[in-house]
Image (spheres, rainbow, N blue to C red):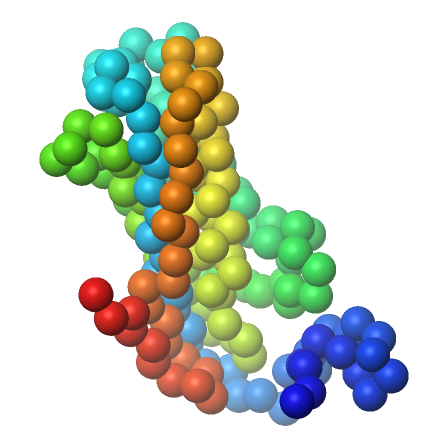
Length: 158
């Protein structure tokens, strides 16, 4: 078995995408942050001292997507053409769902950019609310959909 991020001598290397076709690529990632009902109520009522939690978290996620090659070794810098982050409280009143969609036209995919954006969105929510709820849990960050490139389309089964 060979690994694409190592050469024949076992040294780390960036995958050469020079000969790959430029295609439109999309990745959608979901993640969740669970919290106390009182914490979510404070967020929704904009009672958190640090400000509008969801707006700041969304901005942090967008910025994080653009910083991915600086955070994860061997990721290619990509010209992101769109980053959308939806933050929605679920019916339970204790869980917030984060859905990130990232797009580019490039020679490699944007799955890692969507993963990093979702993670940093959740981490920012945690950071802004930790003074009132240190028991928040970030969970289930996962790829839901990807398109483009040689491997084509992927849809996570329910």
